[in-house]
Each structure stands twice: as C-alpha cells, then as structure tokens.
Length: 135
Ligand code: SF4
Image (cartoon, rainbow, N blue to C red; front, side):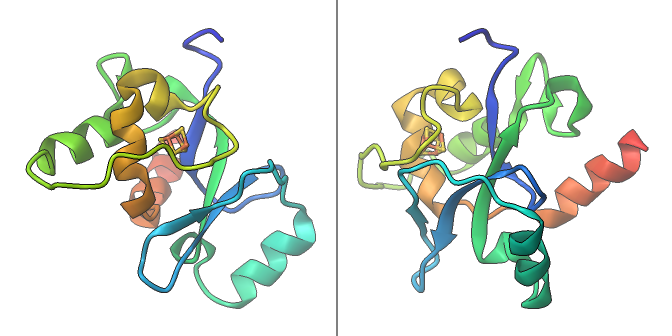
C-alpha cells in the first residue's frame, strides 16, 4: 500500500469511520478484530452518551497535509508519544486490530507503534483545532 493511502488509527466518531476499539475499564483499548463501519445511528447514539472518542477509538482515511498533526511528511502523533515515553517498560505485543495493513502509525514505526497504541485515547481538542483550521 502506498504511503498516501493510509488509515488514521485515532480519528473521530463520524458516519463511515471504522470502529477500531473500545476503551476498557482500565483505560486501555480493547480492539475489534473485524472491521466495523459505523453508521448514522451509531454516531447519534454514541454522542447522546457523551464524548464518543473518550469511550471508543475510530479509524478513518489519513488526510496527511489536511491534518494539524502532519509534520515533516509524516504523522507527528505517534513519534511524539514514543519519544516522550521511551523509558516505559510496556509489554511487547501486536494487538489484534483490523487496520494493520493500512495503519499510518504501523507504517511509520512498525511494531513499536502497536506497543503504545492500546494506551492512546483520541484527543478531541487537537482534532477540533484541525477542523477549525481546515475550514
Ligand atoms: S498502531 Fe498497531 S495496534 Fe494500533 S491501530 Fe495501528 S496497527 Fe493497529
């Protein structure tokens, strides 16, 4: 798959997005191994119960330069997280997620991205800044 045709593993709750996982009680992500595209009803119900991105993780097309997190030709999110947490002794594992073959973070950082991924909950403030800037 080409570098320009990747999936963002930390996207927002909107129709057509893929439900990547659910935030467990311990704050880590429980991945959904079969791709599940969310529809209008899911989006509506999820928003009725608060911020969906604090309870789920969503994936969608990586928009590269259209995203505020895009920096030096790559996604800056995973680089920053790895660099800032290099000293953590996390279990090495590849979660059973549904997007590995297209995942932007995996493409950039390989298995190291998957070590940190279960601890990441989408920061909606950053996403909203992106939306405002691209309007
Ligand atoms: S970083 Fe790894 S675990 Fe997370 S979505 Fe990408 S491929 Fe899946």
